[in-house]
Length: 112
Length: 112
Image 1 (cartoon, chains in turn brown, yellow):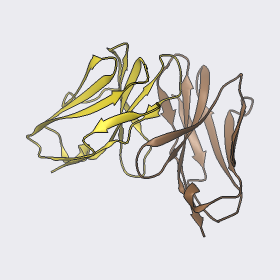
Image 2: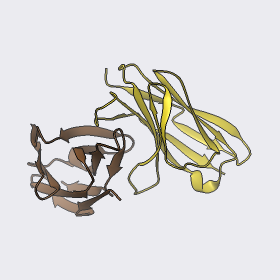
Image 3: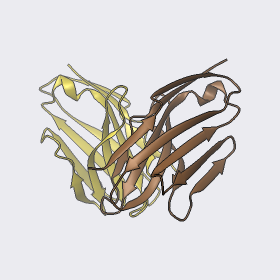
Image 4: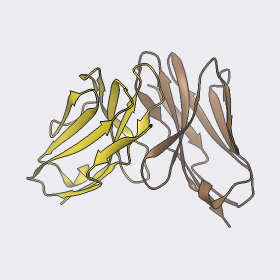
């Protein structure tokens, strides 16, 4: 059974700190790994990582895929209170095309 | 335009009611999804439509009935729901083979 595990489940830091969120997966025929940010309502897409694109960066956020270790990290530098959210990792398998398996999420709280 | 819209935003219904949730996208995506999300849990896939045909049903009870009238619209018909069906119902869409799914804001459903 495909499985995605995120750690930590909860993290509280001060504004300006740098955080690293972890995601590990066990998926048959991996296709892609995605990161989403969820605040009050819908998850919003952050990054998609594949075998041909193992590192992505956007502003203060960056993500790396380690295919050997079957894991990914999401880094956020110079955190702001607006970064407070649940960060979801999801993995897509080839034979489960269109089916994302989500991890439990990491609840990140940034205190001023 | 990367917007998926959902109506209504909130819905309260009794266990004997019949209601429908609606989802719309105009990104030309040919895959559309329904997810159910309980508090502090990740989204759980319910249904996937590909090219207006049901391609995945995650063993969802028959009191939930999906419908895809055309490539832009997705409905979820609800009948004889139980209080435990109360949740946030999310719609998403993607290009057929891409893992990058765009989520709508969700419908917060309460069954009384």
